[in-house]
Amino acid sequence: MKIFVRERTRASEGQKLPRFRVVGVYGGDLKLYAKRIRKCELDQIASELGAEVVYLERDKEGKHK
Image 1 (cartoon, one colour):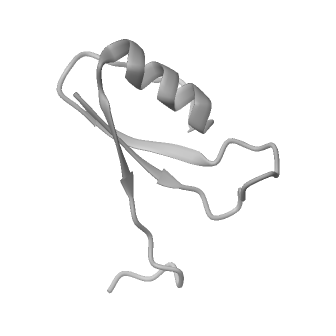
Image 2 (cartoon, rainbow, N blue to C red):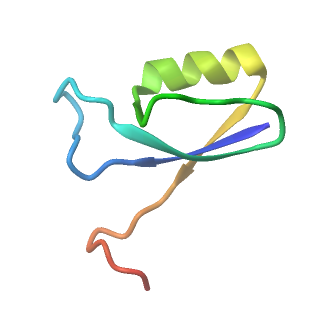
């Protein structure tokens, strides 16, 4: 199972806001009800499921290349 996430642009480290947004899940039957998720929560979910977390890269300009 793979969980694809991307870092939010408005939330930075140390800001006490969820930094990641789940983009999709491949393989398995997982339903996430949160729009945004903290890294510690994401790691805990992945370890319980035996899933791999894939961090998608974003360009710094917010434009598609």
